[in-house]
Amino acid sequence: MATEPQLAAERHGVFLTTVTRLYNWGRRSSVYPLSFGLACCAIEMMATGMARVDLARFGAEMFRASPRQADLMIVAGTVTKKMAPQVVRLYNQMPEPRYVISMGACATSGGPFRDGYNVLRGIDLLIPVDVYVPGCPPRPEALLHGLMTLQAQIDAQRLDAVRWYSDREARDHPVPTLGQHGLAIDGQTIDPIGGLPLLSPLTSPHAEAHRSGQLEHPQEIRLFPIMDDLVERETPWRARGVAREIAADDLKRGGNHE
Amino acid sequence: MSDQPGERLIAASPAAWRDATRLEAHGDHLPAVARVVRDQLGYDMLTNLTAVDDLARGEIEVIYHVVSLAGGAPLAFRARTPRDAARLPSLVACWPGAELQEREAYDLFGVVFDGHPDLRRIYLWDDFIGHPMRRDFPRQGDKYIAGAGEE
Ligand code: SF4
Picture: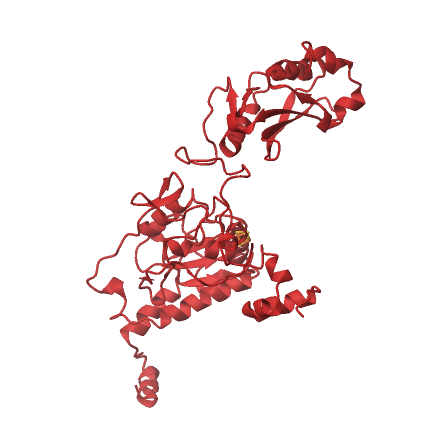
């Protein structure tokens, strides 16, 4: 729309916009999170709600006690296998549109407990994640940035493209059960001890879940610097394979990447 | 321990029984030792019960930490049991606080405590197979996958 007529109309108290923009403005300015924390990251989430960083500036301070009233699930902390069914059930109970922020290394990948027998290796194996916030724990500023990223994603959505304003029905995500060797869906173990997860991550770039159908990172060498001293004693080619900051950090600590 | 574990225990010098690692009870004598520790030495509270999987010796070692509420040095004693048939008498009758902790040792190490009133898994779900704190429990994780960097 041309700016001049719009400004002229505004001077007469008429404000013109598109329905999509109005909807998106409304939704992104009132993202109510579910009050729900799983481990140490939850402490940082609480700090984010407190006065110093003040989530309320972004309209997201209303931590709701019921999933029925919440728009956003901040998975803040370690998702143990025993907790995973409850997390998925809470997600299924949230009305659409619903969003998920995976906060911290644990919720994203299992974090320092990834090699354990009891921790889910990433909540995105079970529910679609919109924004990942790295860190262990992420600082409140990082969570705030995650929320702003989510708001930018909401702003980019188009009403005619998102599922919840179309005819397609909302889909419940399968709730895993506690099987004999770990989590199972339909009786099949999905997260076997001693192997890789048999599900690929669910991502939700524009609130539409995609699953690649591939195994999670089948061939790649993934290094988890938090827990892997390999990073510290590896040869330079391997070190160059990991993120630059990690290699730099290593060198700072006196590693010998000759 | 001899037939009169209590007497042996009392006879030991305080320095000896304060040295936690030296007091070792045979499984059969465990309840008797516990009673002596509680009634005669005055250790009226079990603060911790933990286990160590000694793969090399093929044994599981259960370690009991007790304190006296009246004060004084804490005491630890231990008992060993073979890994493949890990059984020990329960000490719940002696220290009720052992109940949850014996369930934990059963859950994670697979030690069966005879006489325990309610020996079920406590952390893991009932259907779970295996005892994950045992050293031969399969390791999981990317770094153990062949080619992922570790031998
Ligand atoms: S990522 Fe770190 S701080 Fe967050 S829950 Fe996991 S261990 Fe705790």
